[in-house]
Length: 296
Image (tube, rainbow, N blue to C red; front, side):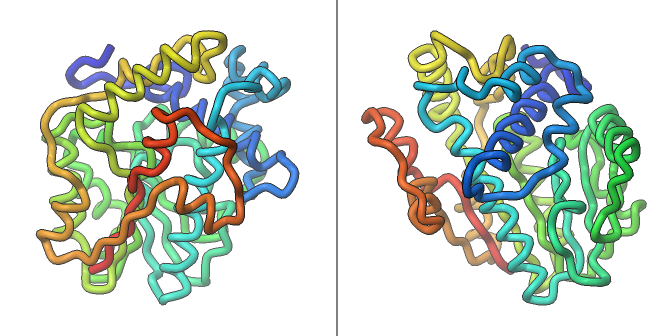
């Protein structure tokens, strides 16, 4: 359970969910005709030594019969990959990955010369990530700058101290983050992004409806993860906050951003992927527009 000011490393609490996501990315990248390329995800999983995720990576058949896992992570990762690539093609040379976790986009994506990529996350998460990348001689394809700070604290000051230029257009991402923030911290997050975003900035978000999605996720866990929990001993729903917060799409629209929303089912179709017939409860969730891109 969450507590005020709690912290974590990569094998505890919220950090363990990031390790799970890295595992699902590794599985997608190793699949035939993968949507993404990620040679770093399996390195992070192996270095963690976590028995559940290392075993899952070695034997993906454990997920047989569990709908949408890890497929959704492939769709989600490609969505954010494409977002950054599109922003770079439009001339944006500053990117901020909020709650970067174990994704290695600064290394994975082909960034144009002169691009700076800032990664914000908990100190212990970034420390682990840096250690693994260094041990394997990984070289970023952009000017990568890590910002070790808790998002419940004054992260804009830490970002500026790392060299962030508020006057330059920025591509921001908040992927798999919002339910792990208290409502007030989420609202401050968007306020700070709005204040730091020059004209031409863009933002990609995985959006959640407060309360509803937490309840649904818990229901899905009990129904579909009864045989095998893809996340092992951790229950992501117990790490979520379901307190009151603004709807991101509406908040951004009210503050002058142009917003487009996408459902996972729309992404699957655009990527030329078919999804097996889903039970009604999952199909409804699959068709909800929970991913958005906003432009200023």
